[in-house]
Each structure stands twice: as C-alpha cells, then as structure tokens.
Length: 292
Image (cartoon, rainbow, N blue to C red; front, side, top):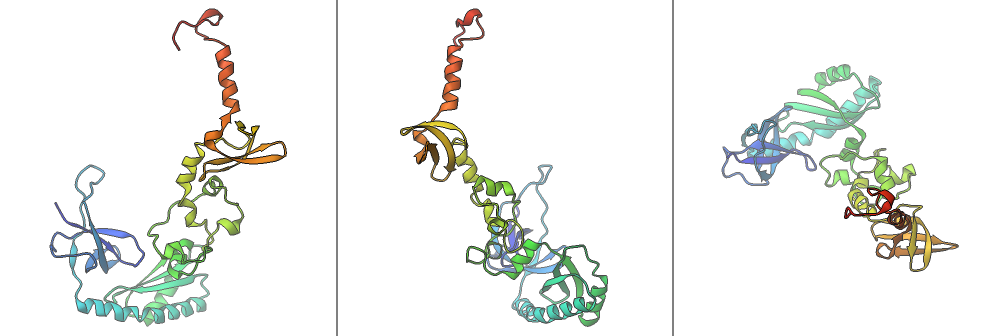
C-alpha cells in the first residue's frame, strides 16, 4: 500500500495528496518539491492519509513527490518571497496605466522564481493580455493572472471580522462552505445586511457553524403560532429559544418562557381526541375489531 502525504502550499490552504512511497523517512513539517498544474511547487507535509479509491472502486493514482526540499531550496524561496511586494506594486501601476478595472491582490513566485502568479479581483471578466505583456517585459518569469472571488480576497488581505477577532478565512478555513439566507433565518438572526454580511460583502462564514444544531433543536419545539398548554394555562407560542430548548408563550397580557418538557401541544391533542371519538373507519358504524 502506498504512503500518501497531505501537502499544503500556503499557511491556510487546502491539502493536496501525493505519493510519498519513495521517501520512507519523510515526516510531517518536512518540505517537498512536487509537480502541480501550476508547475513545480514547494509544499509542506502536514500529515499522512490512507489511499482513496476512484469512481470505479480502483485504487486512485497519485502524483509522486519528486524530492525533499534542500536548504538551498528554502533559501531560494525566501529570496523570491522578498521580491513579491516589489512586483505587486509594479503590476498595480501598470494596471492603472492601462485603466484595467482590476484590483491586484497578491503576487506569488514559485520557490525557484521561474513562475510568477498575480491574483486579482474584478466585478467583471477582464482581458489581462496587455498587462501580461507589459509585465513580461519587466520581469523574467512565466507570468500568470488568476481572477479570484471576494472571499478569497478577504482571505489574502486578512484583518479583523465584525466579532473583533481575526477573520476565520485567514485563520483556519481552508475551504468555503455554501451559505444561504435560510441559515440566518433558522438561527433567528436579524436579516439586516450589516448583521449577516462579512467584510468580503458575502454572507458570513460563521452562519454555518451552528446551523445544524439549530435545525435539530427546532425539530423538538413547536413552531410560532401553535397553541399549547403550560402550567400557567393555555396560550400561543410567540418565540422559541432552540439552544435552551424553551419557548415563549403568550397568555393574555403575560408572557412566559417554558421548558419544552412542560408543554402540551393543544392542536395535536385535540386532533387525537377527535380521531378517538370517531371510532375505526374500517368497521361499519365505527365499531373496531381490527386491533388498530
């Protein structure tokens, strides 16, 4: 069975799997050189995983790790990283001269400086051919421009979220989950855009964190408007607190917060009583001999 290493190319990035069978002494935290769709890259081994099967149930083929990174490779990467800010500023100046409606967010050299990738954002699709030609005349590297979305921009820029701590996307999120307004509604969060929108202008990633707990908790509670009986009397549910498993019941002018175990759903009870009085529909006249 092959040894599969999970490799990360950025501090907060996705894990990619490579065959490490040729390097029995490889350990987590080691740096390796691998072949990717963007050319040869340097990544860090984070952990080792079990091989996966492909769609046909056969053992999946993994690209092999080319070699373990040497001290020279690490020094080369540091040297090229030090030049990224310089070429980023230069690219922004050229984009402004060409009047391209883009925001150049990041410049990233490969570990050996042979490839240079510019990450940019824009509201529309942009033709970067002229900008690429201008930069190719100034920088000796294989240049690529990659358009990214608002969430990826926020991830790169970093900063503080509305909660006052560093943004989740810049701290630990390696992938973005689909998020919908339904998640905010399920948790009873105000739909005010300032309350549910992140710094990226999209719905906040944290809306998904407790969504499943709210969904499960609400299944145990009556919905708003339901008639219930509580120790204080009969009333109507006006609100729920899923995490506490309590409901707010209005009786006249008074409102009570009651644990779900103290509730009796009147609508359901009345429906059961009506069914019981009606007898069994399987027998003429309502008499029952079917045992149901």
